[in-house]
Amino acid sequence: MKAAYNLVLLCLLAVSTVASAQTPNNPEQQPNSFTLPGAGEDNPLMQDGEFEPPMNDIVESQSIRERRVLPYENLREADIMWKRRIWRVIDVQEKINLPFINPQRPLITILLEAAQAGDLRVFDPIGGDNFSMLMDQRTLTSMAGGIDSVRVLDPETYEEKIVLQERLFDPTSVKRYRIQEMWFFDKESSTMKVRILGIAPMIQETTESAGRTIERPMFWIYYPEARQLLANESAFAYGNDAANRSWEDVFEYRFFNSYITKASNVLDERIDRPERSGREQLLDSERIKQEIFNYEQDLWSY
Image (cartoon, rainbow, N blue to C red; front, side, top):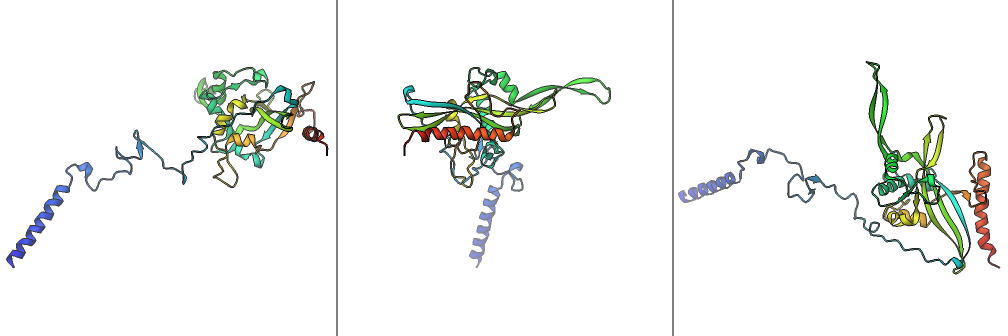
C-alpha cells in the first residue's frame, strides 16, 4: 500500500515539473496575451510585413494574362477592290455597352494606366484623327488628375489666398467612345471585312464662358498597337463569369452596339452636325450601313 502511495506522488511530481517547464517566462508570450492571426514573421500569409489577401475566387485566373493575340493576315493592295472609312460612336449607357463603365475597372481606367506607364502610345486630337501627333506626358498627366491652384476667400480676414486642391479624374465623365474603322472587300477571300483603326474616349466638360456642356475626344489610341494590352484585360460577360472575355474580344467580335456618325466624303462632313435633327442623323447612319451591306450583296449573282 505504501509503495502504491509513493508511486502516485512520483507521478504527480513529474507532471507538475513538465507543466512548469513549458510555462514561458516572457510576459509578452503569456497565454493571456493575444496575437493577431498572420502576425508572425515566418507566416506564409505575410510578405515583406504586409498582409496578403486571400484569393477571392475558386481558382486563380491565368488564361487572360497569358493570352497572345493572333496577328492580322497580310493584305495585298491589289486584292482590296473597295474600302471605306467609317466613324462610329459607342454610347456606354446602352445595356449591351455597360461593361465599358464597369465600376470595378472601366475601359478608360485601363487606357489611362497603360498610357501613364508608357505601355501605350496616345495621340493628341489636336492633330486630328489620323494619329499624326503624339500627346506629351505633361498633358496626359494633367488630364488624368493633378493639383490645381484655387483662389479662396478667407471668411475671417476677407483676404484672398491660393489653396492647392487635388483633382481626380472621374471615369463617369466618359459617356461615349468614338471608333474609327475601315470596311473593305477582300477579293482573295471574296468577303467584306472590317478592321478597327482607332479608339477615342469622349469626355464631357462644362465651359465656363458659355455655361454649356460640350463633348470632345480626350486622345486617340491606335488600336492595332493596343490589341495585346486589351487581350490581357478582362471584360464583363453577361451571365457567365467564367467566359474569360477580354477587351480585345469585345472589339474583334463586335460585342457592342454603335451608330455611324461619319463616313469618308468629299466635303469631310459629319452626320451628327448640330443643325441636323436626330431623325435625320439616324436615317443617314442607317443609309450608310445599308450601302455597305448592298455592295457586298451586289457582287454576287443568284
